[in-house]
Structures are given as structure tokens and as C-alpha cells.
Image 1 (cartoon, rainbow, N blue to C red):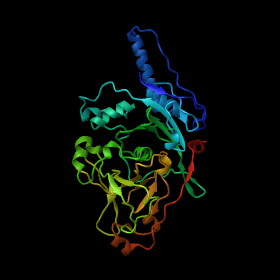
Image 2 (tube, rainbow, N blue to C red; image 1 turned 135 degrees about the vertical axis):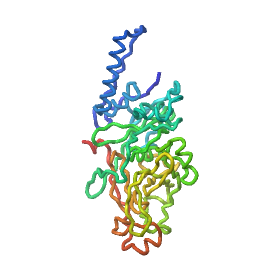
Image 3 (cartoon, one colour; image 1 turned 180 degrees about the vertical axis):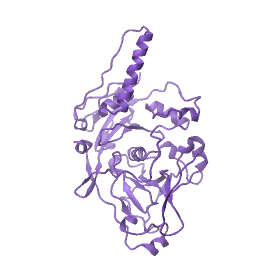
Image 4 (cartoon, helix red, strand yellow; image 1 turned 30 degrees about the vertical axis):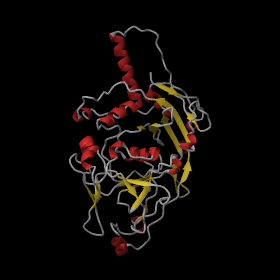
Length: 379
């Protein structure tokens, strides 16, 4: 049986913590047809409740892993001697060792898999999906602009400092629970495939590396990406220098000279034309399942192997090819103030000569944020 290992923490997110009930039957007899129907109806009701997000975060995790659940935090020792301070200053973690009992997608075709698509239901489910080039997360088409739901206090955007992880008993990543200010529950699995802005941004921040469907070279990996992932393949696992001497229209990102940053394509349905210095945005398809039109949208993130704490990572989104950036603030639809070249009142730039020909002002600086716990943001 899958096992979760926990200890009760009553202060989780400032909410009362209750573990899920685990009913164990000692009756080994097979259920009758009527009992099977009752069980199916109960399972349907359970799925409906999860879909309606009527569960607290701990109850939601419990429903995903089908076990009693209680979370550790930084202030409580755990039997595996995992130092949660390494992951975040305000970290909550459950420990789970996965069990792989057989590949359910061995003979499933691409068309059949997406015929009635549902997001991955467990870590094991996500793992097997990735072996076959199947998605784990939200596959709805994405717009190029993020929703502007970042919280502002005293003229500064608020970044959430809380992190909820599922780890194995050696401290390796299993999953991350997204922060959401409206109480919506969502989880992303390490090693899974994701394309939505919220899920990809959270993945980069939580794990410091790319989702498996994005880990392809922009020059040599396009065919491999499309071959396995079809229209959900993404490319551009590339070093981001942040060299503002070479690219003077780019704003300087925090600690870019001290930490390794990586860039990747986000894969929206838009890009900038390249006919003039004053460029216009147009709609197109990033990946049609045959070719990739890379467009102008990128995600840039701290990918330094020496950085494990989520507090020391940054994720930025740019939809105008590094002219401006917005920071992901560690909660759904939470993106910070746009800063950079166009934000300074300049025209869009694509090169050094563009900047010197059209720029009136220096790019605006990275705006500092305020860190707050999730319990403070939803109270």
C-alpha cells in the first residue's frame, strides 16, 4: 500500500488542521453488484467534490494520495531528518514513497488519450504519462498576457513565501501544491508535462528546472519535441546571460550575475512582427503538431543547482522578447509589475541598434517585492 508519513501540525496556513479519515474494512468478501454501484456513486461524488474545490488544502492532498495526511513544517522534526529550511523559510511538507504497479498507458494512442482528457490523478499517473509523451496538467490554450491579480501593498507587489511540497523519504521532489488566494486546489508533479502559465511558472519556481516537455534545444530538439509531445512540445532550454551591455534594452534581473538563469519558450499563441522597429503584435500558433513558430514569449528562471530554497529563486515572464518582464509571485495569476524597455516609454526593440535608434529612456528597474505567508494573504 502506498504510504504517507506525517506528523500533526495544527498551524498549517493558519487554519485548523484535520486529517482525512481512513476507513479500513476487515471483510475480505467481494462486494455485491449493488455495493459496486454504491461505491462507484461514492467515487463519482468524491471526484465531483474535488472538482468543485470544496476541500481544504490538506484534505485535497489527502484525496489525491488516498491516505490520512498531516503536514510537517520547519519547526517540527521529522523522522527522515529532512531539513525543510532547505526548501523554503515557510515550508510545509508531506512524505510519500511512490509505488509503481504497472503502466496504464502502454497501448494507449495519442488520439485515445486526449479523447476525454483529465489531468494527472497521482504522481505515478504523471510518471507513466511522461513516458509516452502525454500531458499531466491543464491543456487549455493560453493567452500571451498574464492575468494581473498580483497583490499590491504600499506600492509594492506581494510575493508568497509559503511552499507546500510532497517529498519522498529521502527529500526528493514528488509534487508541489500551488498557492491560490481564492482557495482553488491544484498540484503539479515533478517530472510531469505542463503548458499553462500558472503551472509552468510554479514548476520552474518550485523545482528550479523545466517540465519534461520543455527540455529541448531550440536548434536541434524541435523534431524530437514534436515527435513525442505533438502540439504540446516546447523548446529552448538555454542559458540566459542577462548581459545588458550586449542587450541594452533588457532590464537587469536580480542576482543575474551571481546565479545561473535559464530561458525557455512559453508557447503562447502570439508574437511580434519583425518588419520595423515599431512592431505590432499578431496572433499565431506556437506549435501546430508539425512545426514550431517560437514567437516572442519566454520564461526566464533561476536554474542554479546550488540554489534549493524557493526563497532564492526567481521566475520572470516576458511576452515581448526580453523588452519587459513580470515576476511570478508564487500564487495563481500572481504576476508583478511589468518593468523594462517598453515600460519606460520606449518602442519595442530587437537589437542594440533598435535601442539606440528608438530609446528615449533607460529600461525601468526590477521592482522589489514584499514577502508574506499564504496565511496572511488569504486572511
